[in-house]
Every structure is written in C-alpha cells, then in structure tokens.
Image 1 (cartoon, rainbow, N blue to C red):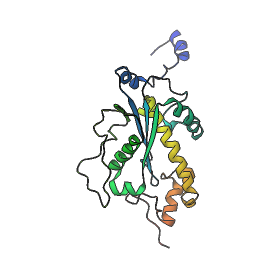
Image 2 (image 1 turned 90 degrees about the vertical axis):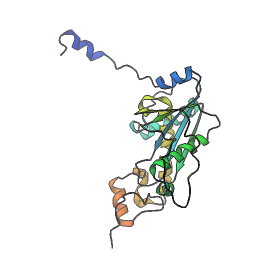
Image 3 (image 1 turned 30 degrees about the vertical axis):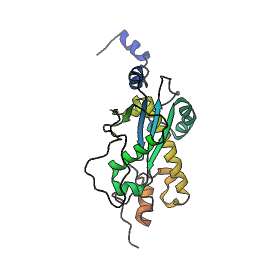
Image 4 (image 1 turned 135 degrees about the vertical axis):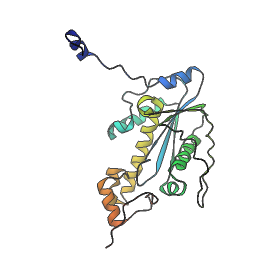
Length: 236
C-alpha cells in the first residue's frame, strides 16, 4: 500500500489519453487502406441489423468525444454524425431485414450485412479492423438456407484483425458503430409511427418490458425475428 506523500500525487494523476488510432496507424504506415467495421441491432427482437464501414487512408485525429456508441447519449451520437462523415475518407452502411435474419440465421445474416456495407464503398480497402472476436465478413460453413440463397460473401478473404471492445479502442470501428446506430435508431423511430404498441421509439426493438408485454398482447409484427424466442401471445 502507498503511504504518505504518494497519496497526494496519485490524487491528481490523470489517466493517459486513449490512442484511438493505435491499430490504424500500424496499418497506414505500411501502406494499407483501412476499413473499420461494426454492427448494431444484433440483440434486438425486431428491426434490421446494420453494419457500418468507415475507411481511413491517412492518419487524421478523430472527432472529439468519439467513443463506444453504447456509452454515448443519443444527442452526442447525433452530434458526431457530421464530423465523422467529414473525417472519414469514405463510409457506408449495410443492413439485413428481420426476414433475412430468420431465413439465413444470425451469423450468416451478419456476414451479408457486412458484405453489403463494403459493397457500398467506391474504394477498395486492403485490411479490415472488426469489432469483436470473430470476422463479420466470413459466414459459417455448411449452412442450409431456405428459398432464397444469400449473396456471395465476396470479402471473406480480405485480411482482417478482430479487436475485442474495438469500439472503445479503435477510431474507425467506433465511427462505424456510431453511424450505424444513428441510422438504425432513426429507422426504428420511424417504424414506431405504424407500430406504436411496441414502443420502438423508446426501445429500438430490444427486449424492454413494454415491448415484451406488447408481444404477449398482440403477437409479432412483420418486422419481428420470428425464429427467435419471442414471448407467446396470450389467448383472449
């Protein structure tokens, strides 16, 4: 245990600033075109999953206040959209619907959404930084699907680095998450106008108590993931 004068010193010490460009810098220094990738909506009961992709070709300091989108208020996320779109060399979003999630399963649907995000870019990234512990660009092997086959996962061989808690450690990943979440949240708020009973303007399709109770009263809508373990509708 530290005693005496050390206590006063520690009281005023500041935590070192996070280097959100640590991963990008290494890649940029060797000439890579970097794309940060993250998803939102994976755990929701309704609505799409959306994947953001943000490209960086040169080292530029990210906008002040950038962080894990889940740690930011809605107002802060919204205020970052314009600075992020000006900061990024390029960015794109890709989504899969609830029906596609039901058809292909969560893991393959994630890969399709990530593929669609990269399809929306005009540049050709050479290395991906991906939030989490698995590569979103690669689908599971030997998957059986129903009537509609998914599109080819044409970026499955793109060199990639997965980063646990990447949305707190990596600027391009954090930017991708913020842009994707603002977009998806706005969509769920717009859907609320037609499906008010589920209170999506407040819960964004996640399993909040009022959403679960509405499922028990009215059953699922066309935007629900019906293969998931949704509450059963109560009989009248």
